[in-house]
Every structure is written in structure tokens, then in C-alpha cells.
Length: 251
Image (tube, rainbow, N blue to C red; front, side):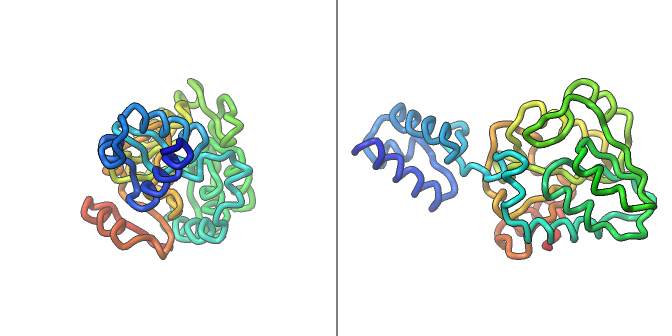
């Protein structure tokens, strides 16, 4: 079997089963695991999948940069933003992550809300300017241009001085086994720092990110209090989350 045929078959298996197990595929095709792993490495380098121990998982479309993510399912992000914003109560200290979905949360908070919103995203902070009752705290640090958020030691130090009621977490991938993942090592550290400072963490997850993975782990799914996702998300996924006492809000 030619390389191009093997790769096409691997992608078909990934689409069908939601994962590729190198050992099983090598046995099925009568090829060495080394050959399958090499194909998976090359497919991963093309952004077509994410390698994990023993095989591969679907790659998240959220791995592209900030400007590229703006065009991915805008209506779904708007619905998620509206539903997430409705969860914010007066008097709370709320952390809004960076990313295009978090921006939609900021755009959809109710006009008379009185709360404190903290973010390490300049883009998110700007969206909050028109809301007179919202105190905005912007965390400084090194600007990670890919996601337009701050990272680094200064950002971590500032985050550790805040106690939040709620953290809206943006993720690149969300998978029952691979957990909550993102595409940058430092950004994953920032997200973990926020989770440690919040009483509850709620993930903002469009359906295209569910069942996918990115290279860097933020936390296991079980660390979440809730998920806000689209209305047509898989019922099996909802059942799986609720079995772990994770509240699912379908926008």
C-alpha cells in the first residue's frame, strides 16, 4: 500500500471511530507500528490530527490563530456567548478567557449587570468598555499574539492575587480521555492558574472542538463545573458529562 493510500485510510478511520489506535491499525493492515506512527507524525505535522500515546485523535480547528478563528461557526459562538453571559450574577468576580467565544460572552452580558470581570485578553477587555456597571481588570504580561492574550510570570503573579467566583475557560480541544487541551504550553499554564483561583470553571466549547485534542493539557474534564455548548451537540456527550456531575448548558 502506497503512503498516500495509508494516510487516506488513517484519516477515514479517524473520522469513523474518533481515534486511531496504532497497534490495531498495524495489525489490520499487516504493517509495522513504526510505519503507522511515521504516517501519523506526518499527518500531525500537516495539522490533520493530534498524536497521543498509542495513536491519534482529531485535531481541533481552534489551533489556527485568532484572526482565523473569527470565521469558524460565528453563529454558534454567538449562541454560546449569550447563554454563558446569562450565567453571570450581580456582585460576582468573573474571569473571561481570551478567544473569539469569550468575546461573544462580553458582548452579550446584560446592560445593567454590576460585577467585576477580569481578563488577560485586551480584545475581551475592550468589549466591556460600554458596560457602566462592570469593573474591568486587565491582567498584563507578555502578549501572545497568536491568541491575543497575555502570558508569562507577571501574568501568573497577578492571577494568583485574585479570587474569582467563576471562570469561563476557552479551550482548543475537549475530549473525554485527552481532557481539556490547548495549542500553546504557556497559555495552558495561564488557564491552569485561572482554574486554581476560581470557585467554578465553566468551559466554552463549540461542537467543532468536542472530541478533538491539542498538544498541551490544561486539565482533565472532571475539573469542570460546567460546559456551555451548542444546542445540537451529541446527546452521548451530554450524557457522559452529566454522569460526571458536569452541568451542560446547550445554547
